[in-house]
Image (cartoon, rainbow, N blue to C red; front, side, top):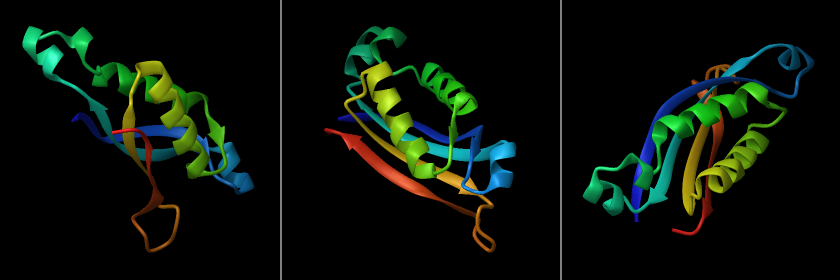
Amino acid sequence: MDRVLIEGLSVETVIGVYDWERTIRQRLELDLELATDIRPAAAGDDLARTLDYAAISQQIGEFAASSRFELVETFAERLAAMLREEFGIAWLRLTLRKPGAVANARAVGVRIERGER
């Protein structure tokens, strides 16, 4: 199976368990691998026959803007479910990082895989 990549996507959202975190927007960074067969799109040079990474990135931004989760785990699970349903993605790998969340660490986060390859 081929994969469409979206790497280093930055979004802002309300995320965190502390009271002060509930009053601000914080940056999350995402890397995605999305399984698809690119051959039909390549054969006809047709965007409509592949995963449109611009549309997917926009949808992720809108999801983040309207979300208010405490845990990055919840954000990741709900985002993965929405992407799979909205775009018909059979399998995905999502890495989500929350920069600056822990002193002396560049970022913390989760990596999940959902669906069948």
